[in-house]
Image 1 (tube, rainbow, N blue to C red):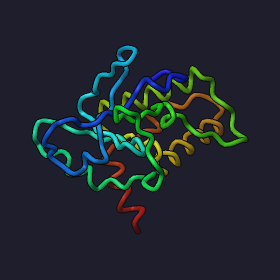
Image 2 (cartoon, helix red, strand yellow):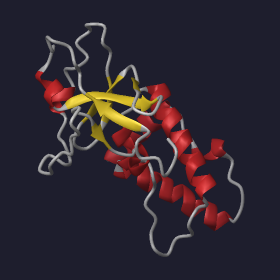
Image 3 (cartoon, rainbow, N blue to C red):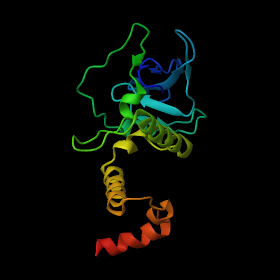
Length: 177
């Protein structure tokens, strides 16, 4: 996932003769470039051709495509650019770069890449949807952490920021009242 190399990743068609789900008309497999015109499928994931949303998928016959038809494409009304080989091209970095406000300090490329890489490792190791990165709740939470860092003007212990699942569960009832 190198910035400036938009052809590092593609979404390739599911070329099985008997497709198990109608979702495969809108979804394919993400693939990473391994040579000049060669791409290797990234196992365990399926991606929307239009908006590039990526979901976990297991090809073991477990029926893991049931969530794919529920996908509401954010670019459904936009046309899809498909090459002669039915491969959709788009840089994956486009979807992982954080947007900054005009008054904010711009991070260095190295710091941006480090954050992007950590999010990517987290999503892949926990089999999370790549759309989670655009979730307003995540953005709001991270903004609060950044604001607190500025308030204290120094290092914040990550253990003071992160809370347990039990603490979240208990707090749901408290915030509901």
